[in-house]
Amino acid sequence: MKKYNYFILIILALFILKNECYANDANTRHHKLIMHGQAYPNSCTLSEKKKMNADLRRRMLPEWRNLATAIEIILCRSESSINAISNIVDKTVVMTYEGTAEEKFVKSSSDEKEILKEIMADGEAWNARLLVNAGKVKLQYFSSEACVESVSFHHSQKGWLVSDIGGACD
Image (tube, rainbow, N blue to C red; front, top):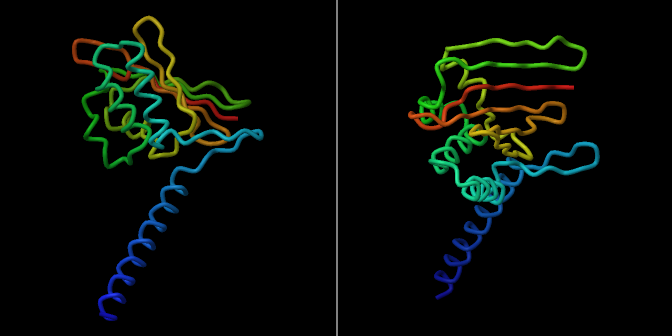
């Protein structure tokens, strides 16, 4: 009987240790971004993804689930997921970047791979917000303490397509 109790104790200890390690990993992966004394949530936490989906659903956008999936992939997955969203890039995408005391850089690109690599946040996204205006949806989020990124979508016969991307850093 004692061997059986030790076996259960060891299994229980391993289970607790595994869950503790997983919880610590999840917390480090989705840490908050502290800026100017304010904490911003990582946009890849379950609660933030639920808020984003609720916002899309509430706005009654066409094919909002497809847009929600594309946004989740852009914000939270690594570059290895690019193939999952390869069909969401418009023929030509305008890329606009600016920094403090630097000239604005504007470029048009038709290179789907370049555009997709540029928009993948790989989990480094905080305080994501949607701005909806005249059928366009603009996703904005912090990529660091100094930078804000944006990805704009428009709806077409092909579904939601990325039309503009940009970033600004201090």
